[in-house]
Amino acid sequence: MQRPRLATAVPLCAWLALSASDASGQQPGAAEAASADVPVAPSSQPPPQGAPPTEGGPLTLEQAVALAAKRNEVALAAEQQSEAARARVARARAFFFPELTGTGTYTRRLNEVTREVGGQTVVIQRSNAFNANFVASMPLFDARGIFLYRAARRDEDAAEWEAVEARRQIGFEAASAFLSTLAQEQVYRAAEQRLAFARKSLQDAAARAEAGLASTNDVTRAELEAASAEVQLSNARNAAQTTRLELSYLLVSPVEGNLAAPDTLLSDASRPLEAHASLAEGALDRRPDILAARLRVDALEENAKEPLARLLPTLGASATYRLTNEAGLAGRTGDGFLGLNLIWNFFDGGERYAERRERVALAKAAQLQVQATTRRVDVDIEQARVALENAQAALAQSDLAVRTARQNAEEQGILYRQGLSTALTVADASLRQFEAEVAYAQSRFALGVALLGLRAAVGLDPLGKEP
View 1: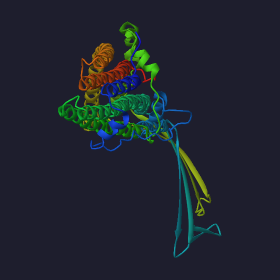
View 2: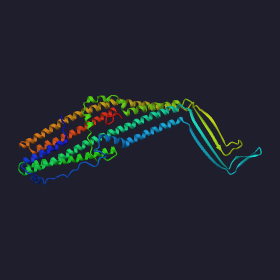
View 3: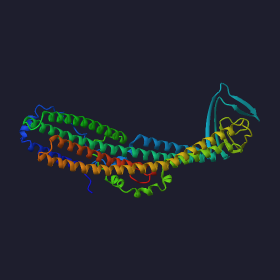
View 4: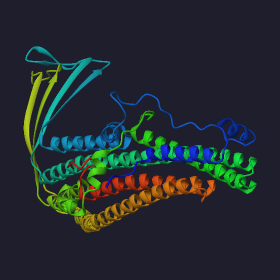
């Protein structure tokens, strides 16, 4: 079965209009004269058709998804959150490395202090005194750092998966907006064709009424149809421009060129449901949001172990070296020492246990949220499958409606040439064909949106690949 195309409505309607003019016995010039007093709506302009945002032809679905993931602020912000998590890991790792600090002091005194020692004059305090201290310290054992570092690592992995999920979701938004824009522009073009035919029908009705072959009521009906077509064209233009603006917002770039039909996506969406059954396998292991949530729980559990680590003592080492220009009685300008520090906090008022209970409760709450999200995956997949099934059924019904509307228009044209039908009946048949073509186009793109919903539920990206 060959699918109908919206463009085929133009030759058919033009042929019907010419047939109506011939049957009325009016020449083209007479029809134009009859329509001189007919109000005509301002000429409508299609959506902007400037240079495409990418070189090499119309904007494709793949390019739209890539641009959204690369430019949209949501994806960029998620990348920065991931970078911040990596910085927190570096900060947690610094806990295990030594610290080296140096301080210098200059002192200006009013008097210099000296002493006689063994017949020599020794300066105790100089008028201009300089001192420098260098301190190196390193923890030898502190159990808290182990759990804090583990928590930071889990947090880093979770942030990376959340960045992947952000890019994936913005890709689906861009893909949906892309399909919506295509559908609205199809409606706009169909509305243009409907208005053109309505105006032609109005001219024919006016010519037939002038020739006495039809009543003035036919002209009134034709005027009403032309006015309705103008309103529909205005609404379609506004909808097409609005969806294009939304797509431009998601891509962070003006979309002024043509859009390429996503044939691959629509072809995959038309496949039988059994062909998509395997997508649900391993969905939990592919969903970046599920993986990130699990890692967040692991990070909270590691963080909850840190208060208990405070029960153990901490052992550290420190080394100090001092330089001065005041040798004093010892006669040395440099001195240093090495020390070990053992700290054991036996009781802190119960603070560690309170923090432990708080962090354990937060970890359990996060775990429950992960369980709820995990259970929701099966529901999302089933809902997406049902939506895809309904979209396929709607497309099949729209296809049948288009073929029926085409056949009806052809039959009405034959009856009109035989004098068994009226021009208004022919116009109504063509209008039904336009509406069927529009419904088919919308159902076709709605089928693509349904497949996008299934891919989102099973953890794939808009192009059907694993993120």
